[in-house]
Image 1 (cartoon, rainbow, N blue to C red):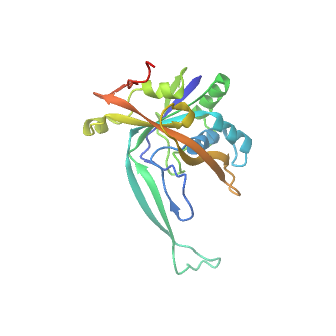
Image 2 (tube, one colour):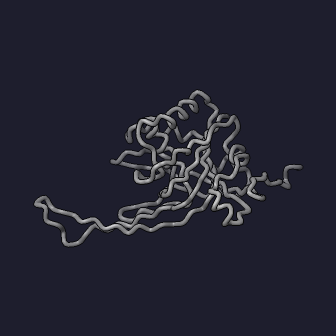
Image 3 (cartoon, rainbow, N blue to C red):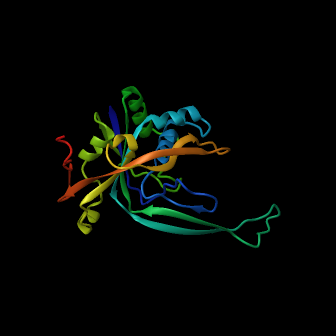
Length: 234
């Protein structure tokens, strides 16, 4: 297994899996479909390249919430004009939601090392500009953390806390949440989120449901400590 670790720490992020029409919501952590879109852009896949985009669903995926961030609501007005250049009476109104000052560690992996090397090369030399959910949200320069030869869960459990120093000083955080593909976590119940990519096509964009589970890891004195599982001895 080879795993790639990324840090998403832009000033604004938006990861909507349930956005329609004029209201664009964001989830509280990056979606797998959003990260697949980022990788697809790096490869240069088109929106209609269903085969290339769907193959990325095979990646094991997990995300750790290192810094929760705050929800930002952006109320936008846009003036619309007809073909003669005369403005319509009522402006176009949209509501857009973002996460500000959030930091996430994203991990994805696969047994095919050659394919993972290709993904790494694409991320470092992207064909299209990758972004954090929306085109207005750029990646930071230090987004690529590195690679490991372990699974995505073990990689996240061992990686140091990625939150900003001011956040660590200000917040007495005891646990970090990890949201992962349900088959990567043994215990607990799963929830369904609609972010399994079927097609990014603008004519018929489609996503299916994906089961997700949550796990917590401990933070003691700003250091991540693997939790003891009382059932390990049985």
